[in-house]
Image (cartoon, rainbow, N blue to C red; front, side, top):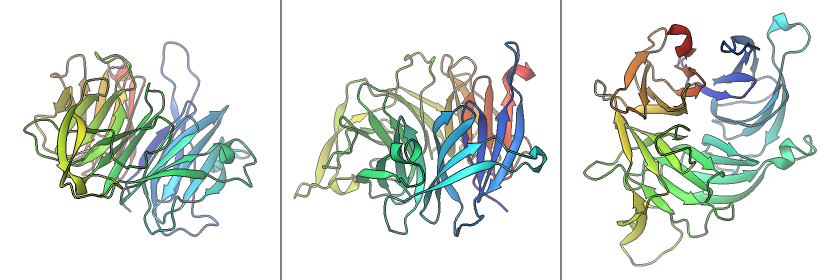
Length: 371
């Protein structure tokens, strides 16, 4: 069965969510001269004892306590659950994960479901298939009386377009949420959150454009920039993967310019007779592409051993493209093990390794080991 697996990582383990299953790979202890080994810890079906009509559609890590990790997982039937994952207990040969499942009510009662989950501090951001973005405070569920508490959904926004990716950043001098959408006029809107809630106007704080003389395209992946990039380690650097095969990097610290957009093309609750609306806009400070491929970018991650790399999962042939932002013209590409014809649906750069997942298998590249 073909799936669209998703990855999440903590200091303890790598979690692969595929279909209705989660698979855990733990990081073993190591000395200072080697990377920790990655070994299969166990798996668990999320069908057991629960009615499920859809696969997992989103996952995000929200907390780690010792060897326990807390994740939120969204399903295509619209439900969201909090999963507390612990090391296997009892007979470890069974490879059955020890998990606690807490129901977290979805932000709405519609048939829409969460396409992307992202988190920061004690906040959870859900972005639905049709562009409903909702902020929640998960402390009551994850830190208090866990059996009788629930998520507190308190601020929402309607993007009014097919949506793919979200990025919540609270460590910036001005907290913000960014969204990857298919809106031909506003594919990458950013909303500042000065009071940790969305503005009632629904108007984006800034629109990140594809650049001058470039046609519009959907945005499928979002990530904070590499920590050792030439722009510094500011959380106000945003990296995005686009349908047109480009990686575009933005610096939210730069001055914006006003650009007019059709009023109906952006999220706004303000009505009036104006046909257009001027919104602050930013062009990319750096654009990257694989000159040998015109495939769309499905996933994006930043970091790596030197903290200066960008990895992008492409739409076909399990291709991964890499760039070092210190030398952006010297990128390279590789095929994932197995050479699956599928996209690389999820990618995570961590230390010297790159974790990824195609429709058939998760995989890892360790660049230190192959040098």
